[in-house]
Length: 459
Image (cartoon, rainbow, N blue to C red; front, side):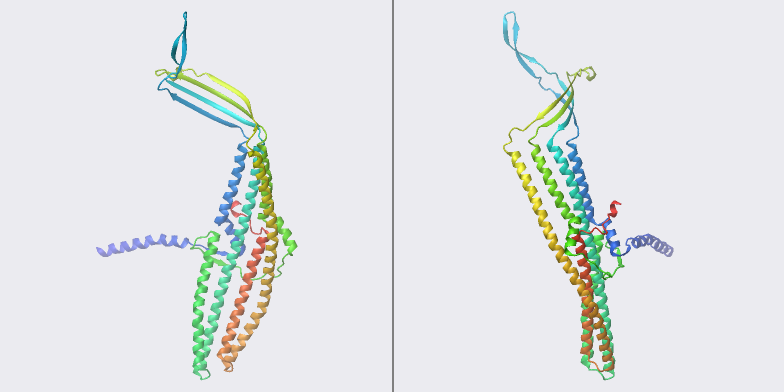
């Protein structure tokens, strides 16, 4: 009796585990991405871009809000009043004998109700028209602000992608160094067995292998950290896997503009410069808003009203609801505001001067920034070319040293030094490539390039 029961329980657990395993298998995905693929994926999943889109939509709603001041306004209102004590007035009594004593008269009933529908339409308001133009500029400013966020996100993704490539390249270099040192240890033990090497050489070879292990562990951990940062920028789950298809390399013919050409391109393309240019225009419109308070405001108004009163016990259908209606025009003109309007105009002019000053400062900063970026790119490219030759020389030196050590005519110190020189040359070469790619990404952002900035979420 117990054995069939145990069999059924085991079968149930096995069947129940199948969908769980299936769910866990599909919980993570593998993404094979080039740098352009990573950017396109990040454009759809990056949270900073989602916030930027929300801010852009909020600016559009501000324009609608500004338009509301120029559209007709309609209000409906209903009131009900229950009189606990009636409202009274006092009048003297009149008779044949003349004016008599003051007499109290009740002029309200137990219940009172009124309904009113009001309309208004601005016919002329200089402030509203200027505010509408300013709000339209604010929407354009928000568009440029979104472009600036896109540029930052694209640059951040490119740099994070290159950091993962650099971490992978560093891990590969440490593994190759470990392999070479293992080979040197094997050769040292073989020579020691044949009596052609001292015991100290074998000990040094063993220590060289063990000294690399901590750096190898750090390199392995660094690849995980850089991948986690990239996945966060792309909006991926931590369980997802990344396979990068690009490599650290320099374009065949990298070309970069001169400083003057780069400055001209940046002035036309950079969103932060365009933002400040629009801000200057917006501040000019705000001057119009401040000045508009000096002009009269003309408004057409209308009202439709009905009201009734009745005592308790009277049916609502039996009450009388007389209707009154009216239309008119209201004109308001400030005669004296305690210099508030003139102070507001002066303040708006100062804000416009501040915006112009910030714009000129930004342009100067952009030129200086471009000069630095171009120098960084050229310096990194020059290091790449130098390290190309250095790596070839170091590889040849290591092969010769290894051959000499195998033949017993070279020392272990010579082989160790050649291996260190090769490792340093390869490391410096990968670092130069990384520095060049990062400098190129920063240069593109400084130029305001809009490559790969198609918003996949808006397509």
